[in-house]
Image 1: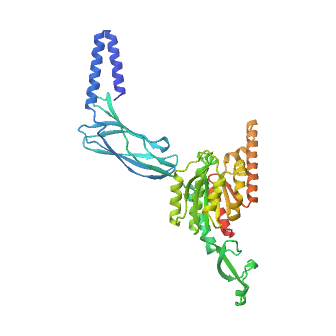
Image 2: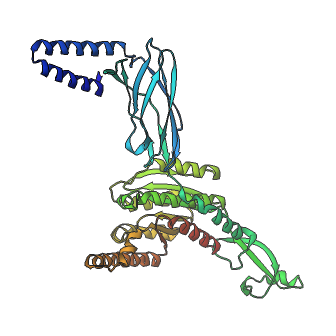
Image 3: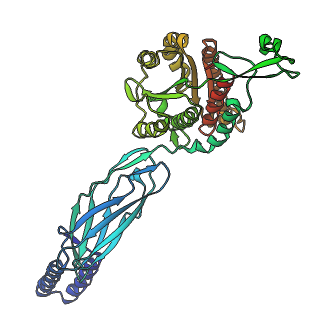
Length: 430
């Protein structure tokens, strides 16, 4: 049972009357009348437990977008239900107006549509639906709860997909429209054409030139059917927030753009998410299945407050990529973590594969480095500059070990990683 503000007001007025009369008889009489009114109101209120509730609507939504979930309420009882209904979801579900008024005649049903704008990835499951049905006097109400199961899966936002058309245009240029003239490690023969001034003399095909009246050069195109293995570090450094989101979310965004681009280029793309242990893996998917599989695997991932086990990660990479591949490590360029964890385990991976490390940077560090307003700003600038120099030193050590390093803030990293992939492909290094 629940009481309303109307009953509280009525009790206050009754107290004034009792105070004026000053007799115990008036006190007991007023209490009896109020108790009778509450009892009659409860007796005439519609049944809460007899309501039948079901759900329908969206089961998946991208992070930051709106989903619609409809709650249908049926009243099989004999009385009309005047109620206040509350649909309880976790706070990160972002329910807009979870409380609704419900006026449901006997034998009828109503559909209540709820808008959800989630603020976190993963599965969002509602708790309970609470219904408070008031009697005709509005003094007291019957209250009950219903469990109406549903599951809304919140997928990564993939905000970087806006960069995909421009990178696909560049990919088409690489893939035959503008043939490369300098052969790289991973290029394959495309065609012959007449020599023009400015062409690399090393591309001249002397045998074909001997059979022709003109000097002929060979053109090459980047190879297809290469293998990419994307490794997401889900350890403690991925939990650090850059702006309003964890580093892991920015790394996922970059991974999705790279996966979409690489599959369009005809390459095979796999995914491993790892910290102290394996959290998710996607392997052997066709081109049409890669992106949906990545999104599903990433939806439930959260950064763990654990140190990554780089020895286990290196072993996982070598096991899943037995032949030469492009291994993309999405991890923080943290000097301590890289120099004491990653670098000692990198040698066998770099010996077999081309390794590219992509790291999310915090724009606040660069902003701190340029501040000089007061003494505190100078200390902040010194700390920012020191962090930047340490990161640059670590990046230089990785580059000397043969690793390609790409950095950028959450908005810059996805297109920069895609550009690095295209540059490697154009140079024939894949």
